Length: 314
Image 1: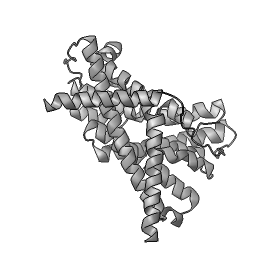
Image 2: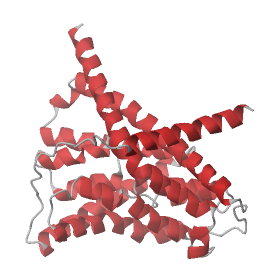
Image 3: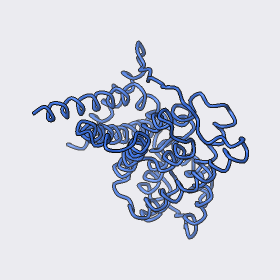
């Protein structure tokens, strides 16, 4: 009975924390960037900028700076509009995947010197760029272009698509938070050493990577976790794309994680005087208060989703 009460409280706290993080951090930071990504594809701007053959390369570069869901959303939009086939979407998703500088600066790079920050960014991005030619090989651009729509209709559709993606991401984060809370409530992580437990947490939910450094984890290990992305992020991508080649994707992410570790470790050892461990002071998340931005984003998303649901029912 006591165990059930403890589990219930742990799950409740985990979901509340995840929900607050989604409302105050994730949605305000990703929603408008998600809209920009969808608009770039639907308006034919990305294709015009990169050319027909350069479209996957443009999505690859966009994904490295935009954050984990951006590459998946760009590929899904390109597949939906007929610019790439579904097989190309699944294949390119393996490397069009990156945490982005914003996430890095808010987690493992918080408080690091500039030279270490830049090296960690390079360590996370470079493996995707090195492996990209293997996944871009054989890509054949299609002649199909997105239909020309009036600007207002294009903007509305973009907002609806971004809201749908944010809803899927938020739902997956909350569901995964419940799982993590259950594991915590059952005290399963107490059977492992502190560093091992925190590494496993980071591989499940990548936002836990900050605590990995706080308990003595090495910077290369943290960078490798960021390159892997975490199972929760992988499930978010599957929700956005509607399906993925799990075996190929996971093997690629494991390969890029190993490459990231080696690149980061080599830099720490030979370029920065053997520094591999970095003490990161405990950072308490500062939830946004007194700002209308989270509420405005949530309201706009709700209106767009309700509008989509109403139109579909008719």
